[in-house]
Amino acid sequence: MSIFATQAWLDDTAGLLNNDPEYAEEAKDYEGSYLYIIEADEVQPTPIYYFVDLYHGKCRKATIVNSPTDEKAEFEMSAPYSVWKKMLLGELDGNKALMTRKLKIKGNMAKLMKSTKPAAAYFKALMTLKTEFDK
Figure 1 (cartoon, rainbow, N blue to C red):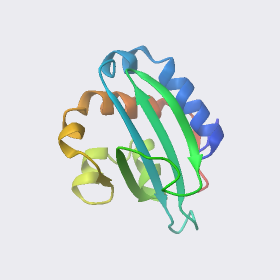
Figure 2 (spheres, one colour):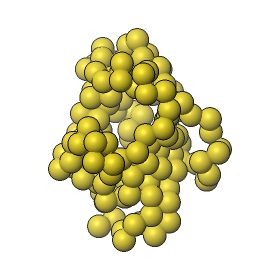
Figure 3 (spheres, rainbow, N blue to C red):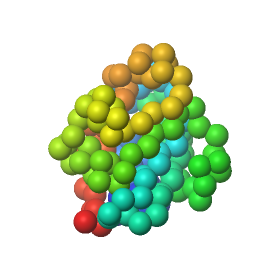
Figure 4 (cartoon, one colour):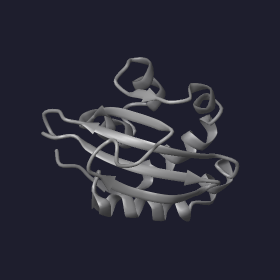
């Protein structure tokens, strides 16, 4: 079990995705890179940034970055720590978080809308990862 939004958690995430046959199948034709922003809130006093590069059903890179400009990503996803926690615990659906503006996404929305199956498989896999949260 690793702590959410740490390099150990990202290493576990990459390993999980790279060994998940359902994700591999759903994302076999998908490629995209993401900058995740965990915004500061009552639990997390400072923002955390991490970069994930997905390529044809594999995670090529998952790393903590110091600044949102350290890696060039196609998409930027941001939400407070508490929202990410609820999504990963299955308490808040990602689409609902997006529709209620708890989750914000920047990038090519047409491409994003075409990638609903890979995205669903990605989050389904992440929800199986044993994750520890600060609070």
